[in-house]
Structure formats: structure tokens, C-alpha cells
Length: 472
Image (tube, rainbow, N blue to C red):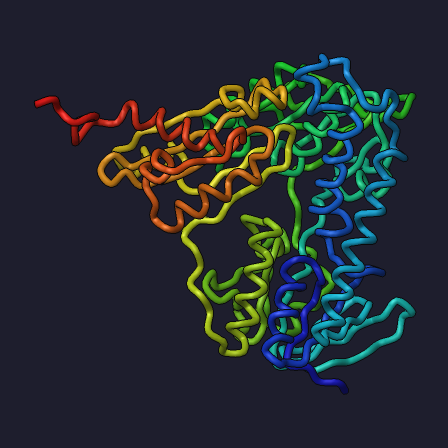
């Protein structure tokens, strides 16, 4: 029986980073991946495909140029599923090639098959030919990710009724689309297809969506979606889905309303992909959605030598945070020094338009009773925004009145997920409003919005010193 210092189950962002970190510490590492190729959910059906699909749509549709050339402008007149799939395959192949090279360069061994625990220090892997292989280990990291939640009352057929996995496996451009679930995944796909001028109806059972985002940003985002014709039905729950004689999907709501469309994407939740891991044999107990509870500082499960990281442990379920979780798990397992985690990290939602945020929302600052002031900049106020033809997009910054410290940055619009990193640096370094007011930004850039928003807040903040020296 082969023995490894660390066995990692899953090769997505969390598993990849855990494996490479352990290898750099000089440990023997085995990565077990159930798919035919490495990469996990992130590469095959999640982060990389959805963002590649988004970029393809924005390029082929001419979305970014419509501010100048009109709503009817398109780079390619008739965009089909094969146009979307070609770029997906090229990107996927590249990502897998990079990952294989990383593992090979760091001496990480990979094995294809389904892993199952036999106890807290052993796994059995059934390879793709059906043969069993046993391995022992000192530590294990469970990084299997999640799978779409598929309730029994939804007749999935992977053509007219799909989940997010089947949507990217064989992409097509429908005549109309219903998206059930206004979470991050549902919102991204709803807005991507809306950018293709596909009529989209978004259905969400709650009265609000993306609750962790500042409400003013969501109001701006919602206005943008309604302006371009998307139908948003909040507080509407789907009772069941039926197919008509043409094979179109009909979503029947609990209030009796019916929404008919060529395609229905069910994106209301995901479950941890832990059902076949034999967790009962090693003592790790998942919750009712298959997710694993861990110590937030070390990422240990109930069993000290078994760790879990990535989407399988739940919120925030971001590729960026998953990587750090995997790295910290490996460092802790082998007693290596762990740097303190930053207080704040950015969220990125790759909808059209993008949303990115870091720090406290206005609602959180108000609830904490902290005296504050906000500053807002519209992208159309910047020369770069005008050059790009941007008609929407905004940045909101929140500052404490007493210390002038930056408390949060919230952005919706073109380049939001890139721009947020300036705010991230200042926030985690304890910077204040004065940094943005006193420093010079490249011109013309969208980053100028930081200075505009800071000055907007400064104009409303109480003066503790005269604005200019008094004349003698």
C-alpha cells in the first residue's frame, strides 16, 4: 500500500493550492480527481467556463461598444452555440495544461478515480477502469466542491431544462430564457444571455437578492437590468416546471402565474459533492446539503487530520478564497507558520455589468452605530468612461467620520473586479480618505473614480481645519 503525507481529494482551486503548498514543504502528495481530466468544478463547469462564456458574449455581441454605435450594434450578427463552445474548449485545454505542468513541476502525483474513505487514515480509489487501489495518508484535504441542486419536481433534460453544469457542457443560444434563482450563478448567466438580446425572466423566491452586497449598488444594478428589458420577479416561488407540446419549459409559480420559455436554467442552490466519499467511515459528518463544517482558522473537520476547503465548506464559495483555504490547511497540517488572514477580501460577481465589493456595506456600518459618510462617483463622469462609451457604472466609498478611515468600497460597472484591488490595499493597510484625495491617478482611467468618490465624501464631511489658510 502506497503512503503519502497528504492526500487531496479534488483538483479545483482549494485542492490545487493545498497540494502545491504541501509539496513545497517537501511532503509527498497525492491528488485524486474523479473527472477524466484535472481542474475540478472550477475549470470544467464553474468559474472558468462561466467567465469565458461571458467574455465571448461581450466580444461577439459588441456589448462594450453599444454606448457609441447604438443598441443594435453587433460584431457578429448571428451568434450560435458553436461560437460560444469554441472558446470554452480552447480555454479549458489551456487551464488543464497549466495545472498539469504545476503538479509535475512540484512533484505532485495525480490519480484518476473515485476516492472513498475506509477510515481516518486510508482511502480506496476506484479508477476509471473499475479497479480498486488503496492508499494510506497522514493528512487529507477534502476539496470536492459542489454540484447543482436538482429537486425532484424539476424535469431536467439538459436541453430545455438545465442546471449550470449542463448549460456550459453544450452551450446554445435560446430564443428566450427563464432563470430560477437570483444568486451569484443565476445572476451571472441571466445577464450574460441578456447581453445577447435574449429575453430573460429572472425568478427569485426572496424579496431581495445578493443580500451581502450594498443595497445602493443593487439598486443601480437592478435599474440597469430593467432598463435593458430583463423581467425580474422577486418574491415568486416556483411550484413546478412542465414541458409543453413544443418542448418549451413552463415555470408554474405558487401564485398561479406561468412563465414560458425556450430554456429554463435552474440555479437555486448547490450541494456539497460528498455523497460518495464514505465519510461515515472516517467520522466526518456533513450537513443536510452535503457541506462540511470546519474550524474557520485551520479548516480542520471534526477529525483533526482531515481538512476541508473550498466550496464544499460553504460561503463565500469563491475561487480566490478557496485557494487561500487550501493553502492554510496544508500549512497547518504540517506545522508551518501561517500568516494572519487579512480582515477583508474582495467579492467579485461576473454579471453584466460586473459587481465587486470589499469591506463593510452602508447597512453594516449603520447597524454598528459608526458615524460615517459616503462618496459616489459615476463612471460616465470620468474621461475614460466617456471614451469607452459607458452610460452606467458607479463606485461607492464609505469612510468613518472620526478617523477618516476607509470602511468599504462597492463597485458596479465595467472593470469592477479589477478596480476593487486599489480599495482592497488601502482598506487592509488602514488607509484613510486622504490617500485618495492627495494622490495622483493615471489619466484617463476608470481608477480616477476613487478620487472623485473620495472628494464627494470630503465635501460633506465636517471641517476640523480651515479649507485654506486665513488671510492676515
